[in-house]
Image (cartoon, rainbow, N blue to C red; front, side, top):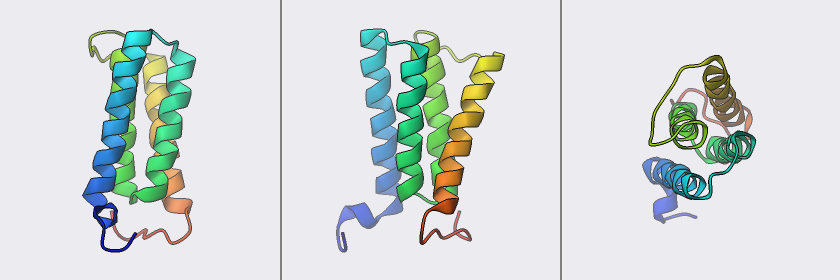
Amino acid sequence: MNGSLWGVLAVRAGVAEAAMFALAALFARLGVGVVTGVLAYAACCVLAGIVLTVGWACAVGVSGWAFLTGFVVNAYGRLTFAQSDLEHLALLLALSAAVSLLRPGSQRSRV
C-alpha cells in the first residue's frame, strides 16, 4: 500500500496495540479462559511480527502479555509475575521476535 498510512511503522504498531486493547475489553466482558486468551494474543503477536520490525514487535509482545495477565488471567488490570505469567511473557516475546526476524524482507538492522 504505497502512499498510505499503513506504510508508517508507528501506525502499524498502533493498530496492533488497538487490537490488543480490543481483545482485552472483549475477553474481560466475556470471561474467556486463559488458554483462549493465550492463543488469541499469540495470534496477534504473530501478525504483529509480520508487519513490524523486531523492536516494535517485541513491544507489542510485552503489551500483549500485560493485557493477557491483567484482564484474562487476573482482573482489573492487575499484573502478576507468577511462573505461568512469565511463561506467557516468554512465549509472546519469542513469537513476536521470531516472526519479525524470520519473515521475508526482514530488516534485521532496524530495531
